[in-house]
Length: 77
Image (cartoon, rainbow, N blue to C red; front, side):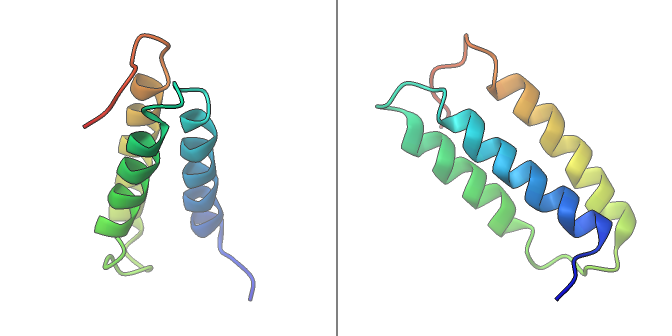
């Protein structure tokens, strides 16, 4: 199965989130991973043809990743 450009972008963002979680302290790493999974799972019901919503969520996710990847953030709830 070939993936569309948006699908690749979503997978790329997910991988980036998991990579960033590896930079966090070992004790809080599961919190970051669970948060990322929950955020992506929460939006699974969005129609894959709803490009505006997907692009909006990608922008929102990238902004969140920028915030949470800063070294000052040690945990997420």
